[in-house]
Length: 207
View 1: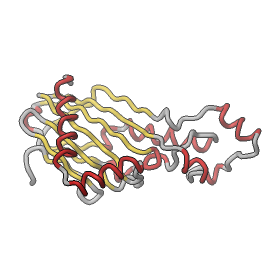
View 2: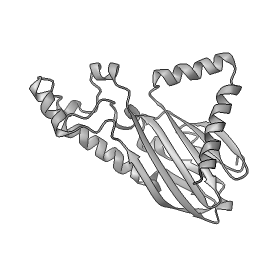
View 3: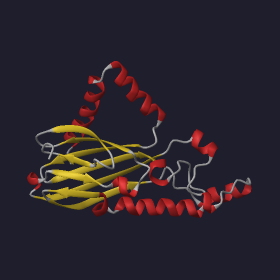
View 4: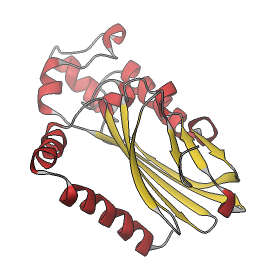
């Protein structure tokens, strides 16, 4: 994917913010500053037969906590989430064209702790029990805001026929309530707030 296309996406995002009214812009700013749980963002660029998608989400939406993992149970949760993010065939449904994954990169490093973290928790008497591993510790939730990101690249046969892409993140990550999508193609650009009941990006107009 060319740098020009990614720059165009950035320009679209900037334009959306600049065109918003004072109250709307203020609301967007507050949401960004608050690191809003339940909200994730995805950008999509289509250039010829190639597609690039990038997901950015608060870690809480993906693994249920945002502090660095300190127990085996928490690390298992992260490993399972990473495997799901790597399963592009489950997460994306392409309508109108056949598209195959060519490259992906999943980044969960912000919450991926080490064995040393667990030993430190034991030494200070703060070892978290495995059956509570999916809940965020009060102190951590107040101090830590971690992100999980995922980048995907696809190549499509007859990409010009691609009409829409369904994003199935809601099914596997119920912590995501709204997915703010922005896209740029060879001939158009757009944005939408996707939900579990409306999870499809229509690249060539509504159905």
